[in-house]
Image (cartoon, rainbow, N blue to C red):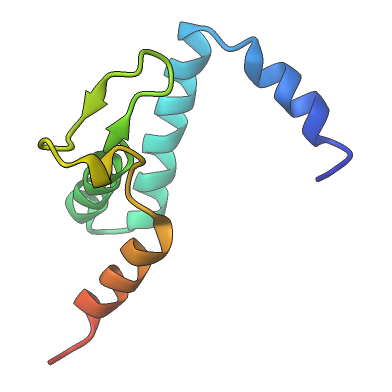
Length: 93
């Protein structure tokens, strides 16, 4: 990874709208492949992940997204608390 990272970074910096569109379609395809028979559950999980991922400041424009006035959410939602919460939700009572 350390050998390929500079080349991948140069390639990613050249992405424009068509490449991002293809990347989004690829993500939807992966969700459909992993979801198996329950396609709706897979897409709902992907949508929830997208909503959690866009909380905070936009790195390009600096606009605040889904913080509801809370300055604690400006940095986004950390991955570890989300994973602990998802693990806790899936456990039976």
